[in-house]
Amino acid sequence: MADDTIGNATVDGAQTANDSTTQGATEKSVPYSRFQEVLSQRKAAETALESIVEELAQDVPEDMRDLIPAGLPAVEKAAWIRNAKAKGLFTKASVGEPDSPGSKRPGAKPPQDLSGLNPVQQMSMGYGR
Image 1 (cartoon, helix red, strand yellow):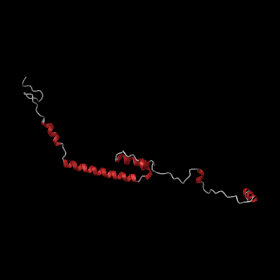
Image 2: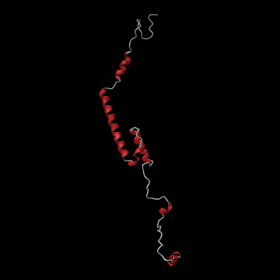
Image 3: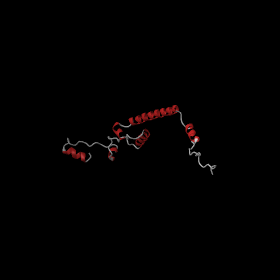
């Protein structure tokens, strides 16, 4: 029964270290210089994205810029601005055009001033002469 070995303990009770797991961890590591290169590229891309989002925000009218959510990341903020523009949130309705149906009627004559006419002239205007 002493010849049967179950597990990886020796006769003294000490366990041996499994060398295959420690070698696998060192083989999969990334060199620090490559990590720094990728990290600097990512920071540059994030900075560029932030500047693009700021340009998108500059296209929004001044009085409506506070509607843009401030706590969103740059990607989500850009998507929010594009969706809001597509739905017409930042477009102003024209104030000078009235909405009544008579406002679009062509050839509408302004009313005549009849205050300077005598009674006979007023009656002749009423009868269409």
